Amino acid sequence: MGISRITVPEVALGRSVAITVEGEQVLICRSATGLHAIRDSCPHQNLTMDGGRVRGNTIICPHHGARFSLEDGRSMSPITPKPITVLTCHEQGGELEINL
Image (cartoon, rainbow, N blue to C red; front, side):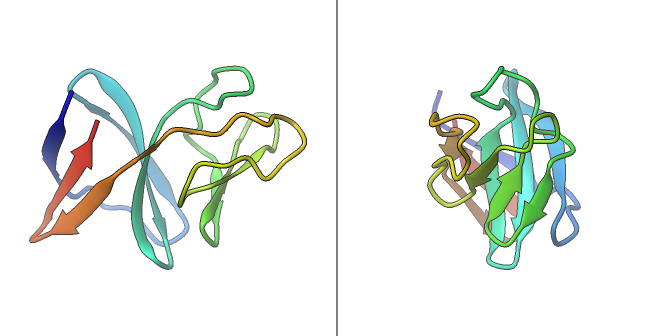
């Protein structure tokens, strides 16, 4: 799909917001190290990650408690070995570039 540019959504530290970018469901998360973009789908049962708690550089699925790294997507939970899909993103000048 390529790179999409969007206006940076308001996301408080430790929170996330679900958005649609070019028809794709994306979750934008803010951790202490900045913004992260992931596909809004938990690999455990393909449920939305929207509403999940952001702790450090991880996100916790709101449905079953599976924890995933926001840096590389790896599962940090015995619930599922499958990773989440992390999208490369870069914030600059009020815009967020997301590589879909």
